[in-house]
Image (cartoon, rainbow, N blue to C red; front, side, top):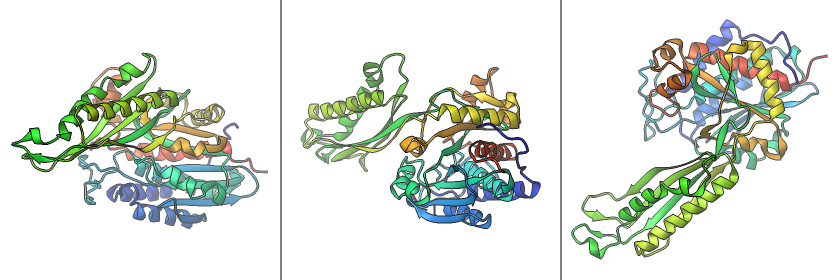
Length: 415
């Protein structure tokens, strides 16, 4: 597969329409599993471009299919959901949604979805340049790592066809106008765990008559900080983060339970298994040491594999991006500890390509402290930050072009 000359262009009118869509999506974010409005906007857009659209796939998932003669089936995937974050960007179209917690597109899913809509329009309006079937996937619940599995379990491949390639991009605080490809894993595999520690509630004045789960939870959190060093080799990249600790409602009441939520991330399934086994062992041991009245409940909330795109398809897409943008705008991307469920679309050996899309505007990049790219990347508001704000005028058309050129790598040639 090689890039072909004469790639269809993003017209001024279409860019304005896609930008309007982006602004609307950004101002009206929806949490994972609640993406009804977002899904409807995407479905309406695809329908208007002639796609055969099916909604409600694996929740609020949207699948649009456009057939254009015999040839490969290429899928473009983008996400629908947002995060429980209160936006502090100061943008005129900033989210003011509270449902019931503040909600924000702090990870760029609105940018991904608008770029996918724009790419769908470009390819639908210039069908003379390709042959085959184009599939657009609007995936729900990526932030909870459950949407891709739900769509697959709902018969994505059986109902709409097994793709010959699945393509996706993700925003990152690189300079807007750039894309970046990895030479191996792009993002880590991850496991989300929840542990419920059972205590015996009582009055704060007589703690010796209770079993305080807060103390047990605190001891567990501190002990977990040593797991990575104890269970993984120095060369392995693994992180363990306790992101939730919930217990009690009043200062003078010893609660009867505490809950921990944590994530483990790494670049091998073996490392993930070892660390998860250590988590299980430590939680149970701390509960036993505290004489908890019942064993802890430890559950795997979700799990996603390492994001390892297909080397051949990645090389072809990178070549296409270099032809479209010029070599200096196509960078290398080191493995990142972020995780997502896109690798599940590679089930049954389906080739995937996945790249990073720059979002930092020229002024933001220049103003960021540091003299090296790594220093500036560390200083810019990252994904999931309440200050995350892509430079739409540059990042959005770049995202559309990146998807179009990548799709043309996999679709068939005319004639």
